[in-house]
Length: 159
Image 1: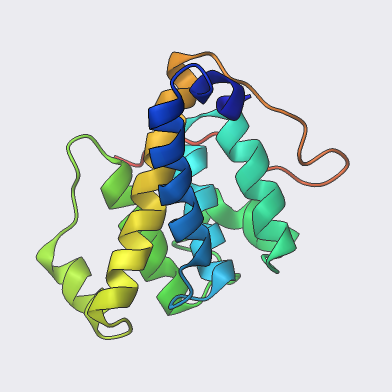
Image 2: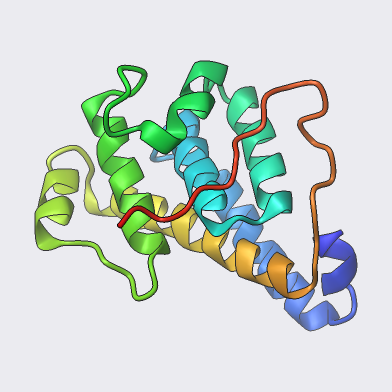
């Protein structure tokens, strides 16, 4: 449905499509890690379409159902590695309004990722926030991508 909506403005659809294509082709960060942060971002945004498709794509890239179920409590869950917790913290911070990514978090991320990888992760999180806000504005709901499979649930941003 988002593509149908974008079809009303072909110039923007082409530009957005190019960004989506580049995001999909970027490969400096493992796909499962990127889909994990996308799903967390989608859950925090509450966008039904985003949660549905992100959960489906995460499962396709190898994110386990156990991890998807544990996303709301990722800080304490044994399902996640320390690196996964860091990138999920990054997703939470970037999804806040205003954005809240501390220098300490960024320094910890730099211990595991180079600059290009950090750009790729930030892009993944930012574009998921963009998708969510666009879809919310047009009332775009779930499209049943996860039919028969586990789908992450909406979450509130932690205090």
